[in-house]
Image (cartoon, helix red, strand yellow):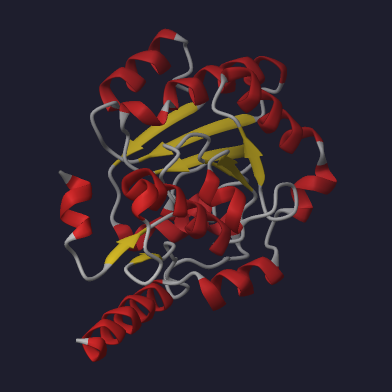
Length: 247
C-alpha cells in the first residue's frame, strides 16, 4: 500500500538511498524519488573549548572520561548493550563515566539494569532535557556513542555529535558508510557486544585516533557546508519548485 501511494506521487523524499530502494524496489524513478540526507544546525551545535566550566555547571565529574549518548530511549537502540559494555570496561578503567540523556519507553528497564549492575555512581540517566541545553552537555563528553540504528536510517544525532567536535562511534549502516569515512571522520562499529566493546576500547586506548576524530575542523566545515537543516530545506524547496514548473 505504501509503494502504491508513492507511485501516485509527484515527489517522494527519502532520508537514505537504502530507504528509497527498500520502499520503491524496482520502481525507483530518480526524477520523482529523491534522497536528501539529514543535517545539523551549526548555530545550535558547535565546539565549546572550556569543558571544565561546563562540567561544573552541569554537575558532571571534572576528572572522568565521559562517554555519552543523547536521544530517545527506544528498545531497538540497544542501549542495554552499551551499559553492559561499559560495565566490563569500567572494571579495568574506573575513570570512566557514562551519561545517557533522553526519555522513552526503555528508560525504566535501563534504570533497573544500572541498579542491578551496581553502577549508580558511574552511570547516569538524566532523562529528558531542554533542546537548547543539549550542546553544552554534548561538550562535556569525551566520546559520543550511537552504536545501533536500523539500516534504512540516517541518524541526525551523528551529524550533531560531529558538529560539536566529538569523537563518535557510529552504526554500520549504509547511510553512514556513504557519507563518512571510517577511522577518518568517525569510528564505525557493528551492533554486537563484542564489536562495540572493541570500538570503545580502541578509542580509550589509542590517543592518536581519539585526537584525530576530535574537533576535526575539515569535517565540521564539510558538515556545515553540505549537511545542515538549511541545506536540507533548500533541497526540498528546490525539488518542489522543479516539479511545480513542470506541471
